[in-house]
Image 1 (cartoon, rainbow, N blue to C red):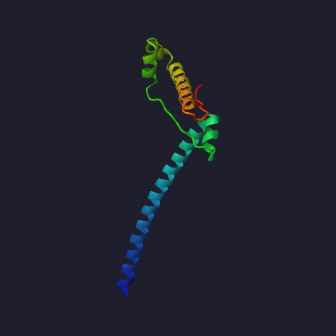
Image 2 (cartoon, rainbow, N blue to C red):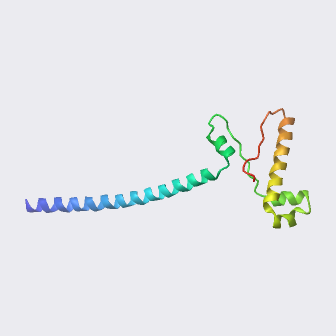
Image 3 (cartoon, rainbow, N blue to C red):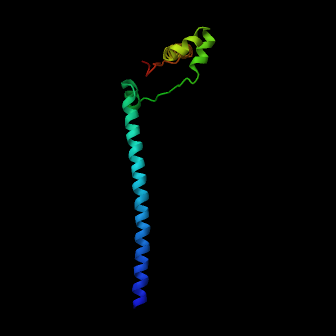
Length: 123
């Protein structure tokens, strides 16, 4: 009977250690999830109001375009874009996005597509 109690106590001790380790892992995972949640909430709050409205609207699908090389594109259009981009990169970016929106409107209209083309998030 003494051996049975000893094995039972040993088994319960091992089980408790395993459960405490799992509890620690779950606490760490919960802390990570809380940090991620806070980061996402902060990012959501930084979105422009019109982008929040578009993203929150489940009825209207949205096509997003991010221009990865605005300075190169501007440099192809004007030789002054390169030097200006060192002083005012946001201005170049704004002009490139506005020009892209104009091109999209014209091309879509030419194809018979009725679309509302807007640029969101430019200051």
